[in-house]
Image (cartoon, rainbow, N blue to C red; front, side, top):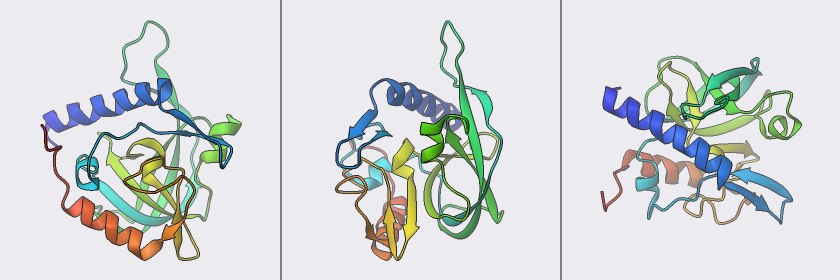
Length: 195
């Protein structure tokens, strides 16, 4: 990745952490849970996926130890955040390139925090992940819950609040149709029209 893109991705991730923490905590009354996301202002998935580096289908192998990481946001106090990595065994690369059979997926929060842990991917779960690559070769979900999709009985489910990805949080979608939709959007990704 060139330096300009690395700086942009770092700034975007940092900004999304701040915005998500301050304004993106949404309460889903139907399913009685909160969800982190940043509301999209994009007109299409092709625009929303502009910074997506990798989309994979795979299985969760294990969860690593929680550690602290600098959020990248300058603050007067402690600006570190808890990160809990998971190892994902890739069964299919839907977009992008990944030479290894596994990736390290970074989850926001500590395994000691019950609310965060309840949202973590569980061992043996089959998932589709829409990802942004970090400088050290690991991956974040793009826009929190928007990039995390659990595969169950030929369907996908997510806590996303994105209207471009899902009509309502928690609703299931046909797996094959969803894969077709996100592959097409990633393949044709583009910068926002007004940039």
